[in-house]
Length: 305
Ligand SMILES: [Zn+2]
Image (cartoon, rainbow, N blue to C red; front, side, top):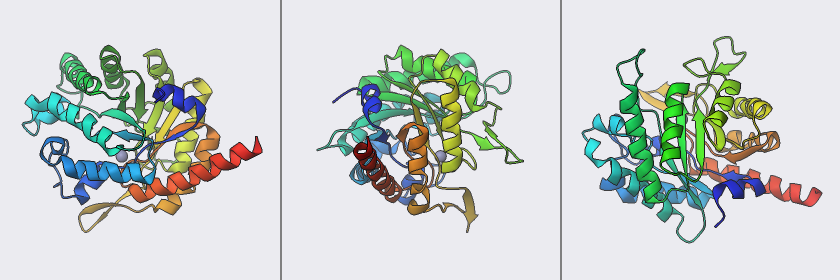
């Protein structure tokens, strides 16, 4: 199989959909440790990821979003960083059994603020990301994504960790929120897409990305792709949520249907997105709809060239 970075130069790839909301459907209680399931319920994690592979995903993110020591400590799993992350890679690899695909090791935010805004030491965050990145790379991940990032300081530590672990491909992914007046979007910490893309490129990311966020639908994601591409030639990856979260009977619900989201696939490809996936609330059905829209478009493109 070609390295991921080579493959996306030839053809855009499809990533997967949500893991967190799928784990809840599979029985994970709110507030419990989903990453622990890599060890305690690997078959449930595998079932979700296999559904994505069967729906047509070319890339699957490991179930390790909260797999850093700082996050795992909140669930008394701090001594299982290595095992949880390696198992995460192995399960995602197993999901592809019988077909080729890329396993992207997932590093999410450490879940706090660093000094001087919060009480986490930069050195502790650096060490936590380094430990997680090492486990993911040693486990055999094809790439590492440092995702749902809102601050450049934390993003830099994640990218640095991936680089030092020897990750063959590093993806930096920001979570943007639409501003109150609806005119633009930036991260919670005030970072705009141009600034993030330039920063990621300078720090050695190979792919610039966005995921999650608030109000970042497929059209907003397309705008972000354009803004990234104005300042960098690096490939772009996008994973928008399935609409805005709504609270229904004390449950968070995402109500954008596969058909609604799939309408945004071709515009994203035309804007130049190299990897397309989806974040919170999306399901294997969303990914299947993406696959259909993507294949139709790529087929059409190949005939018109
Ligand atoms: Zn999300």
